[in-house]
Length: 520
Image (tube, helix red, strand yellow):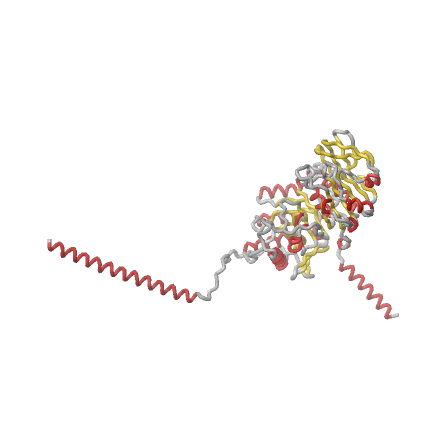
């Protein structure tokens, strides 16, 4: 009986330890990553629909989905059945002949299917009982949640007049004078008639995608200060961190890494500032390095330099909790393996300049991913003075770090007058692993190699004296010193001899001139 009690007590202890091992938020992180096939007929280059594939990729990534993107032309028989979720995007205005292998596979496909655009398959049309009218050119109003966009210019759009299932948002036609749902879903089938990058339809799609992907976790709104460099106004950054801390506004600082010369005083001052930012309720994420050219770096440089910077942060008591990168980095084998592999959390920015090194069709998925949008872009969809509610996915409102005091004051004033509630990024579980360190957070605490980091806002002065050009080796210094002395002696002797010859020559010439004068 005693042995049984001891055994039960041991089991209870293991259960409690297991509970401690999984901090708050970990349950959502251990859920299986959704695997999605995104297949499209056209990238719609030079049309209003250009970029909607990228927009869809970024929304899907914010829900933690791993996405494989292919064109219908590259479809291979049996591929459809490898995925339990498929999205088809039909951007082409003309009739497009689907591959026979795809038609055969889709006839027996039993997974979740989302259709975006025109040319809806007949089985989807019947399952959702769809009927619609189209307009080549129109002005529409889109509303979903608390967001709305009026006077939205659209082309080649379909408005649903009949449907079955749950509806999302509303789409009103000025030309046809009708009001229809933006999207509809019933069971495993869903339909979005219109999706364009850069307007409200990009965010509106997220409301349906959250349900379609079976995401049940609550979302958060974060604030990100980006464009922070080692040469930024660090004193101003310190002041902003203090002001935001006093106002009770948690924020994320997206900082550019230093990839060399980590012992320079300028880098030490940079680290001191980041440490102060961290102590003022600021979260540090490392922005992916700027790619100037796909051939400018050796393939091993990115890995070693990223590891060196991350370990430098850890050595300074700074805990990075994620990586910020443009979307295309997650579709590049080189960048994913050597730049992103150390992080399980990311903040995903839209592509600005795509420079693939080793492009791949399947994305790298993160356990935690945050969708980003510039605050001025989102504000045009929200009524003035209205409190922003969380979007379906984790979202970061991005503000560029102001480089002068006037812009800093304007930003602080705006944030203080805004009623948006920002979440603290470190309250969730995040992990960064290098060969030397394991850094992360949970329940608001920062840890390095299992040790809780005490936030310290004491700033140390950094000595600016530094030999930026290192002296070379001195093994031959004595030899060179002797050679210099020999050369000096030889030159001096030569000058003396030359002077002597000059004097002698002058006297001989003067004597000859005097003798000739007497003869005359």
